[in-house]
Length: 66
Ligand SMILES: [Zn+2]
Image (cartoon, rainbow, N blue to C red; front, side, top):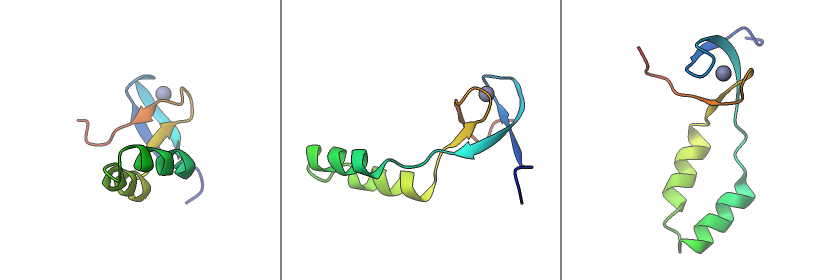
């Protein structure tokens, strides 16, 4: 389970190791307040499915590509 998982990065065009983007909850709270709570569902989505980030270029990796 340690650091051996890889995913394909579209930017690097190769399999890379990745890490998860830590959710910045302070920013999400701010966005929720600004949007009068409309941001809350988005925040929940982000919190439960963190974005994979490429270790090489730090870009987001999206699953489901063929
Ligand atoms: Zn990359």
